[in-house]
Amino acid sequence: HTHTHTHTHTHILYIYSYHSKVLVRGQAEDSSLQDRGQWASKAEFLLAVAAQIIGLGNVWRFPYLCYKNGGGVFFVPYMLFLVVCGVPLFLLETALGQFTSLGGVGAWMKICPLFAGLGFASQMMILHSCVYYIVILAWAFFYLCSSFQTQLPWSHCNNTWNTDSCRGFDRHNMSDLSENATSPVIEFWEREVLDLSASVDRLDSVNWRLALCLLLVWTVCYFCVWKGVKSIGKVVYVTATFPYLMLLVLLVRGVSLPGAVDGIVYYLKPNHTRLMDPQVWMDAGTQIFFSYGICLGSLTALGSYNKFNNDCYKDCFRLCLLNSSTSVIAGFAIFSVLGFMAQEKGVDIADVVQSGPGLAFIAYPRAVSMMPLPQLWAVCIFLMILMLGLDTQFVSLEALIMSVSDLYPTLIRRCHGREILLLLVCLVCFLIGLLMVTPGGLYVFQIYDNFSCSGASLLLLSVCQSVAIGWIYSADRFSNNIKAMIGYQPLCIFRLCWPSSENISVCVQGTFGFSLMFWSPLTLANGVTAPVWATVMGWTLTLSSVSLLPLWAIYSLMNTPGTLQQVKK
Image (cartoon, rainbow, N blue to C red; front, side):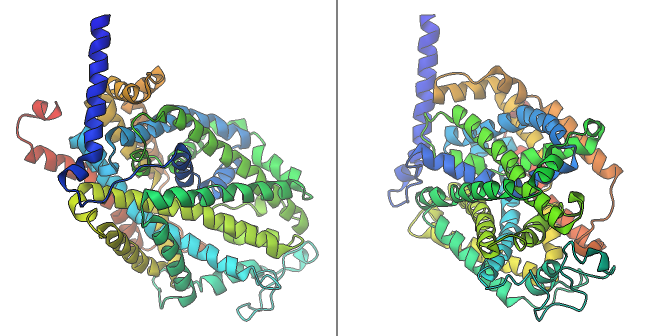
C-alpha cells in the first residue's frame, strides 16, 4: 500500500511538473513573449463559461422545442442526452484544457496527436459561427436604436416603408383582414431592417445602416478580447449577469400579464405520444450540443486559463445546472408573453409561437407594442439579446485567437502580434459578413446557420472525441489526470460514458438516417427554396470543418515513423 501510494504521489508530482513546464514554456524559450495569462479568480472562469454556453439558443430555441415536442415530455429525452452526452463531454473538454493548459488545437496535439483534426475542425466551426452569429447582434442593435422613438416604428402602418396591405393585427379587425394583409412588425423587419429581396440570387448593394451596426458590434468585440483573459475576465461581470437581470424583469412582467397562464400551459402541456417520434429525440440531442457549446473547442480554451488544481469537476456540475435551469426559466418568460399576445389578438397561441429570429424580431416586438410603456420593454428585450449574443461571440473569438497563438507562440505572443491577429480575424469576418447585410443577406445567413455548425457535424465530432479519450488515450488514464488536478476520482459514470463511442455513434447514424429519410431542399425565408448552388455552398461549409478530421489523421500517419501500433502508443 505504501509503495502504491508513493508511486501515485510521484506520478501526480510528475504530471504537475509537466503541466507547469507547459505553462511557462513560452517564457522559458523567449522572455520577450507575452504571458499566456490565467483567470484572476474562479468567478471569472465561471462567468466566462456561462457567457459562452448561455446564449440566444436558451431564450429563443429551447422553449419552442418544448412546445413543439410534447411540452413537459420533452424533458425526458433532454435529460437523457444531458446525462449520457452533455455533462460527460462538458467535463472532458474543460478538464482537457485545464490539464494541458492549451487551447482546442494544442490540447489534442499534446494528448492524442492522431485526433488533432478535432481541434482544427472545431476552430473552423468557430470561425464560421463568428461570421454569421454576430449579424444577429447587428439586427438587435438596429432594433435597440429604433426603440427610442416616441412611437415604436413597428407598431403602426404610417411609415414610409409600409405598403397598402399593412394592417394592425388586433382582435377588433381580425375578421376584416384579407389574405394579402401584412402586419407592421413584419413590414418593419422585411422592408426597413433587411430590405429583403424576393430571390436568393439577388444580393444587390450593402445596406449601409446594417453595415454600420455590424461594424460597431465588431468594434465592441475587438476591445472585449484584445487583452485576452485579462479583459474578458472583467467584461463578463457585466455581459454574463445583465441578461439574468433582464430575464428576471421580463419573467415578473410576463407572468403578471393577462393570458400568461394559457401561454405557460401551452409550454408545458405533456403529450406522451411524442416520445415515439424520432424527431423529438434528435431535437433533444442537438439542443444539448448547441446549448452547451460542446465540440467547438471554446470550453477547452476557457479551461486552459485555470490553475492546475482548480476543481473543474464541481464547476462542471454547477455550470450544467445553471445552463439548463436558464433554458427552463426562459420558457416561462417567453410563453407568458406569447399567451398575453394571443389573448390580445384573439387568436390561438399556436398562431403566435415562433423560434429563432422570428421570435426575437417579429413575435416579441409585436408583443411589447401591446404593453404599457412599450419603449421601455423593447429596450430591455434588445439589450438582453445584445448581451446574450455579445458574450458568446467574444468568448468564441478568444478561443479561436488563443488556439492560433498556442500553435505559433513565438510569432503571436511577441510584441503586439496578438492584437494584429485579432484585428485581421475581425476584419475578414466583417467583410464576409457584409454579404448578410444585403437585400439577399437573410438567405445567406440561413445557409450558414443550417450548414456551418450543423447538429450532425457536432455529433460526428463527439464520436471522435469519445474514441480519442475513451479508447486511444484511455478513459481510466484521463480519469487519473483529473484526479491529479482535483484530488479525487470523478464518478464512474464518466469513465463509462467517455469510451461509449458506440452509443453516441448510434445517435449520429440515427440523425443522418432520419435526415436522409425526410430530406428535402432547404426552405429559406418567405418559403423561398434554396437553389442548387446554395445547397452546394452549404455542404461546402460543412465539409470545410469535418473533412479536417480524416485529412489530419492521414497526414499524421504518413509523417509519423513506425508501425500503426507504434504510432498509437
